[in-house]
Amino acid sequence: MLATLSSNGIGEYLLFGAFAFIVFLLILLFRNPRLLGKWALSGGIGCFALWGVNALSTFMGIGVGINLWATGIAVILGFPGVAGLLILRVCLHL
Image (cartoon, rainbow, N blue to C red; front, side):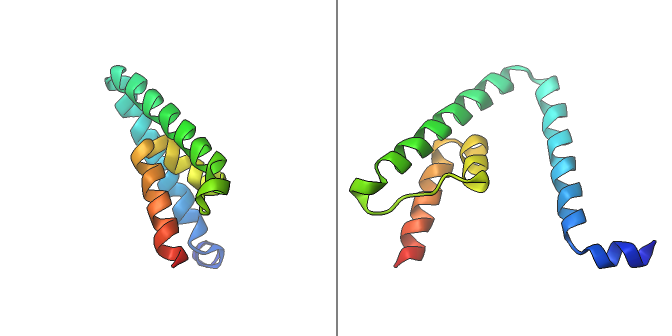
């Protein structure tokens, strides 16, 4: 059993950590339902901002690609997450 855990690598631990985080968020949301509305609004604004940055990328010359990670950051962190992605993209582009 120990050999199988060590041969699969860190992916299982990341998957377990993500599952534990999702369970923690669900418990938090059931304890405070108003938080769900705020989180949904923030996620919607973040997704709209990500779409806007992607749409304006031809005029700005730099943009953030829409993929699983960028969308996840936009949904979880909202507009500040998209701004952070754009700042990281600008800093790493130079």
